[in-house]
Image (cartoon, rainbow over all chains, first blue to last red; front, side, top):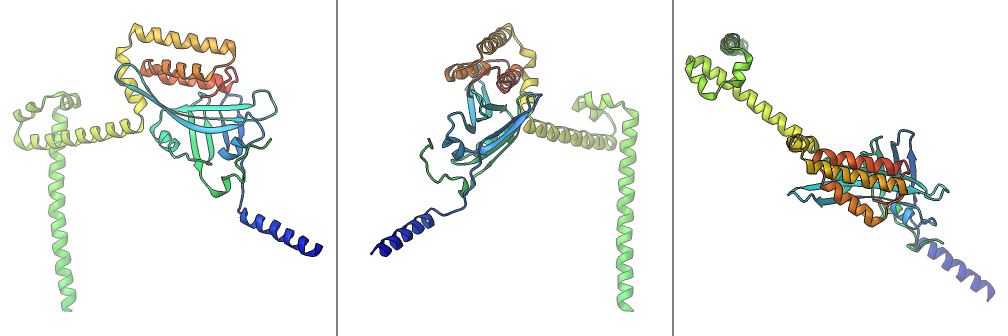
Length: 144
Length: 162
């Protein structure tokens, strides 16, 4: 009887692991800021969102403002914070008004891997996204 | 043998046609060169379109072609430049209309950024407000102030989120 219970428990454990199987590749946020304040950052949104750290974040956005004179200001931006153990974390920001980079920024989606670079002036010089199954988290609950 | 003769004839015909074409092209080139030598380049660009009718018809038709080609090339080049760098284009367009109001707005944004730097942080609401203020700047200043905001945040002088 004990053997039956043991076997069925083992079967359930095995089955549950099969149901949730799939390649996982969490990419924690990594930020590099150079001495001239240029830098780069990368990481996937899900890992940042469900990180145990309350600091970590990564993503890009797009803004359009009425300039009050019949025109608009359009710009895109990316930002990332890596929890490096300091109180504020390691932070990287960039913005751009370049049409080609803004087009790429619109390609972001849920659970994307995000990577971007910026120059010493704080202008984005590279923006990239990758949306893959292995960036979708196993559990959406924030780890404590 | 017949085939070879036919091929030689066809080849000779094609060569003759090519010769005639080359002679025509050389004639046209020499006319264009004459026109270019007889008028300074600045005249060709600045002369009104009607001016060309006062010259002899052959030279004028070539000049017209030349001017049209240059116009088309310049227009195509301008379109490419506009498409690849809207920011530069808008900067050039409004540079001449920089007003005292623009300067006041620039001073306001610079003062706010100085303030946030001195405090060391910026709230989300303040961030939205400063971006709205930047949008009201002269086109030439918008990018500069955005860059300043990014640089101070990358330096850790202002803590906040975009």
